[in-house]
Image (cartoon, rainbow, N blue to C red; front, side, top):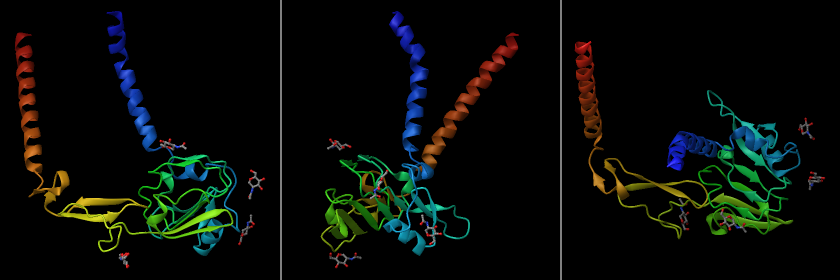
Length: 233
Ligand SMILES: *[C@@H]1O[C@H](CO)[C@@H](O)[C@H](O)[C@H]1NC(C)=O
Ligand SMILES: *[C@@H]1O[C@H](CO)[C@@H](O)[C@H](O)[C@H]1NC(C)=O
Ligand SMILES: *[C@@H]1O[C@H](CO)[C@@H](O)[C@H](O)[C@H]1NC(C)=O
Ligand SMILES: *[C@@H]1O[C@H](CO)[C@@H](O)[C@H](O)[C@H]1NC(C)=O
């Protein structure tokens, strides 16, 4: 019996903890944290260094940053985590706008399957020679092994309907690339639901309609009870 009471007392704490850890996980490595993953800065002679000066970017720690004029904030266009003592690459999502990523000179044993999901711009990855390109070598236009490094260049378009890699999205949906070996299907206009099988307007009115109705009913009940209380006073 005591255990139960203890448990129910702890519930809010557990919920808050779960909420916090979810929140933390989804924002784990933001832009600047990725740039500070290891000490030092991008060096001039390296692949990312050359790319950065050619693109008129600004070096900050292990990153090359640039803004596309106007309102946009600065974002990462290059990431150099070479010689960083990395063994596992779980996620680098702060750098999802990068065009070039260098992970060479690390004793990497494992790169998570989803590490580069959503990296739409990624055009060159430099890895230790024994590591396969993100998603698999076949998902890159060109794979080269030189001087102990593997260089993966040019993501293949996963939505090419005539090529070997074509993977059809369900009927009534549109395919869009979503990083190396990934693609995304989104329902075409006027279709929705599981596999885009339902046609017609999304039943927005119905959902919001019933929400309105229940709010009205609850408000009315509250009003009734308050009125009774007021009367009995
Ligand atoms: C890198 O090159 C820039 C100009 O090209 C120079 O100002 C800077 O000192 C160089 N940095 C290093 C570490 O060599
Ligand atoms: C890697 O980093 C170490 C120190 O952290 C340095 O002594 C070594 O020269 C670096 N290697 C290369 C190839 O840059
Ligand atoms: C690599 O990571 C995956 C999950 O992220 C795990 O299942 C697998 O065992 C790991 N492999 C090695 C060699 O650590
Ligand atoms: C689609 O794939 C074919 C064969 O692999 C290739 O010739 C063609 O250029 C590709 N088209 C696009 C838009 O990538």
